[in-house]
Image (cartoon, rainbow, N blue to C red):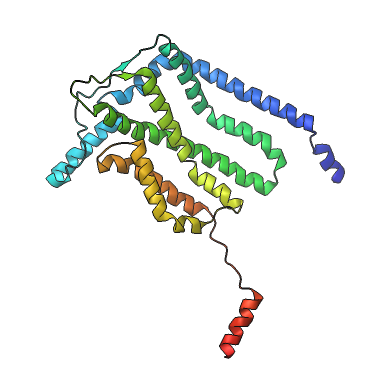
Length: 290
């Protein structure tokens, strides 16, 4: 048995060779998807990336119908911003000669990264799995699956909720009537990619909390103890992500973040129960006898 284990063990150079092939397959997948994204980027840019710039975006239409429904119930419920404005439109301008070409290239790469994310996670799993025991393999497999799902959910929330709400507020905010609002291509893409990927990473919070709990570095008592601090911090983060003055826009970001906080608390272990020392038990017995 020991001889079989020794034969199955890989040397340092074998691990290096396996890592080289893992990186090669990952880079190849990114390259292939980047080429495909580059080929279809014009249509994707017009109908997906630029979609929040127009009044017929799905979130705006849904909020418009929601506002009408609330007003029909009672005029007191007229608390939402005006999303029924059909004239809403954000003009994107290019002020640098090479911006459109480099935006085409970088956006194709980022889209390829998102599309190949499950495969990249599979390659990471394939590389580290030989070093794990069977019970560890079972847990880590679910970690990668759950992490991938949460990443895509975060990106979806960023695209359909966070970025459109931020864009709508900032594009309609007016400091002076003498200022013509025009958004540069670089500024639009920087905010678009940042908010979507930030939300994708933020949605990994339950997974990170679970891993820290497995390592014994985090337990459920931490979330209960600092819940009030977390609410204040999440409100500040939501206000930073969506710098709007109305409470509805703030709540659109705050409640998903707070839900992630509570979900993280659910996945971590309960605080360990401290057993009383022998000296404490003796003291308690003496007190009872007294």
